[in-house]
Length: 296
Length: 223
Image (cartoon, rainbow over all chains, first blue to last red):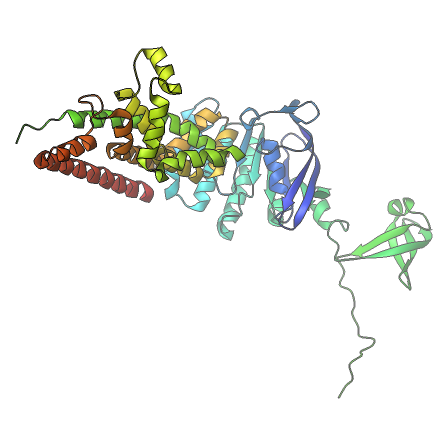
């Protein structure tokens, strides 16, 4: 179980903003932190790893406090027991594939390294130097190196973004299998919806440092709140319950509109409320009613 | 022609060896600090380290002479500790050479530290390795070329120094009379054949050292 609540002032390319995140990740969860670049995703990951310090808040992993601003606790990365996979691999060029993986192991275990390499289909590359590997192979080694430590959490920072589409596709499946087999709680940062859908059981949507939505991939990506195609402000004039649904009469601008919602939603609303009505799934009908351009 | 005296060569090599070794030992932590911290004092430190590049050796030698003599701060301390003067002694010219050749070691090492991608260092930290272990197992092995450059340049620069050694050490046989000074002495005594020989050997050595450096650097940067 990971519990976290952090705040940090960030200097983004489009001005300063505050990263504010609250998070609970259960054992064996696969959380994808989703959002466009520059929204603070990587910073969040780096704060968990201890590579960056939040301004406020706390981070607690498996009952151990890793960071607490109030109590002045800030464990260095060495003591945090994470497996971190960097976007551009960060393999040590002076070491072979085997040595790279062995480097971070708590107990050096040759058989385990070979087993990991076998699962990734790379046992014949054990003595190669990273420079002679392809991008996909490098990222595999980086993942194996992080896994070999048997960390409390695995942190993946856009591990697929440097790979071409096809390689990414294959590697995504491998990540999925690794997670299924080794069941390490994983947090992955990505700006790719495919990652979120294929890998995550939970998704956190981060935009400009704020959590926009959190939940299962379906909840997050199909919820009307998080990514409406268009949304309108409306004033609720009347509620009419009929069986299981409720017809709302709304004033949107100068127009009167009736929409249907389920009873539970309607129960939370009362006449006079201002509502946000948004739609995404339906193709609106567009017809020209007036044109200021004269025909010649 | 009188028999060639190899003592100045021996002394030069001994001086360059100790200077380089000590410079490496102080150079690694100092360059590490300069490369990885952002402090206002760094600018001042960098300027001080680079001073020997622009100062005439005689100016540097003059101030070191003031500092190293029996009444100078360092000379006094040394005398109290070891019962020996710094000026006109081998230890004195080693100390002077360290200061004189400092930029030759610090500049390549600082550049080397800066060339290591930050995420390699961070990866090592997240893999549980302390800063010292990261330095020894990740950073230094990946900047071999910079270390070699620092070693070669410091060694060659010390072999080639003249002004500072002359100011601090004078020309004492077997103690401070290094090759460059022996050449000067020989020319002074119109003993051109000795000067020729010394000069030629020094030229050959310096050429060899630099060639080796460039060949090795080339090989390491390709692999």
